[in-house]
Length: 617
Image 1 (cartoon, rainbow, N blue to C red):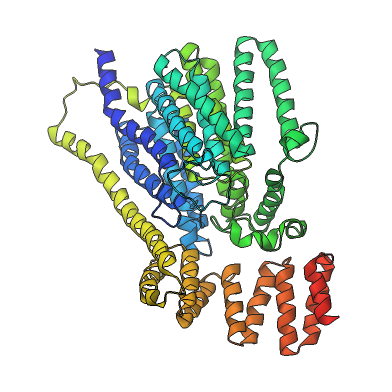
Image 2 (cartoon, rainbow, N blue to C red):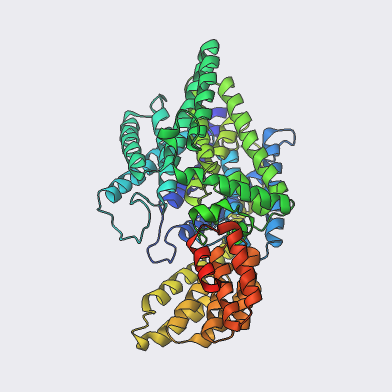
């Protein structure tokens, strides 16, 4: 009788778990060619939908099965709440609130994204047992098949879509070869170690082999180190743990050797040690500049950070002199390329520490559970943990892309779920106990009501987000200066973006430049001026105002804008040269020579310094 009741309870949660797992896979796969940003905004919208519906199931699970405050689940819930509350507070302190909530352009890692990821994490920790963990593995294998196959089409030049892509063609559904290779590596790790799980059928193992082959081919062709890094560290971890559990002495030896190889590999990527010639790639080593800038941001604003997803707005102020001299004065970064540093630098020490605790907790519980289980259960936990390690290893040099991150949070929650002694999905219920029918009705509608209360604002937010994407595409499509008959169409689309309360501010700037090109110069200037007032440190807005000033012979305002740029981008020699020229134009040769001397002080060997000397002698 007890076993049948357990199965009934498992089936009750079965549909919601399918929503969880298939929803995560759908986030990774989904893209929209109708959006200005085909990848990040659509993935954020879908993540909001999935998490909004699961929120009701999550609350209902705590209502039906209250947690023991001395249990592992209490720690999980408490730290998750601390993390998201601290993140919300940091969002309120963010200087551009819209960016704090929805995230930066082509990133979308604001508060809403992390709120959704925490819901996915918590529900996975409450619902995933060994039976459902097998579902994760199977869905991961098929997701890998889809991504790997699409990557192969891109490599062969047979992509369904004609992307305006400055990167390697292998971007899969993630929009960037680094993200694509990292995601394929994580899924191929699951595919590799699923081969050792007896409960995985031969059919899935056959698909897994195909996924492994496709993924390795795509990762190599992507020329991205992130996928290889994730795959390498994950396999080393699995071998080390498995060897230690079965033959302790040999396991210790393998662990030491693996750790040494890991350190040498990291050194090689930083152009040091014996592996440098094989592993060094400038795009990986440049991360050091991003990390150090992020650490400076944290030191300067330790409690709230510089603002949620506002790394790009502050990077040029905190970057080292060597960076612009090596890579160019206009080259920038909108992310620390390290999830831990990104959270510390943009959201502050409380968010960063809570995140670090969550990572440490998942790792500790995962390793403990691997030691306490045997056979298939042990292999299942170790597979999930190894894939999670692969995700974390790539996150040390990568941006927290939603399509990849959603798997990291699912796997982390699943590890805690299968490690928990009391599963929500397998609690016995005493059906002999008399129940009130009216109470049963309330229980049945509780989850849909709670989910709806969360989904309704999510739908409203998503409407505004997607509307901004569509209307921005409309502006870009019709903004052809040689076709003045399109002017009013462009104005109509542009006004929809400008008046959208949740539109990315950068989108408003982009449509303003199109308005300018179509002859609406006054409207464009007014909008860019408003944007600059709301975000005084945005270098694009300031540059736009400087250009307006020059064109209208308002050199005072142009100089004012350039001086502000110099404040927030002190090592931009090109901007100082433009200032130098403006001072010459206004007859202020003293200031012009000051700009020249400033350029020579740190960029004396550049063409810009040569030009400054030619202008002033």
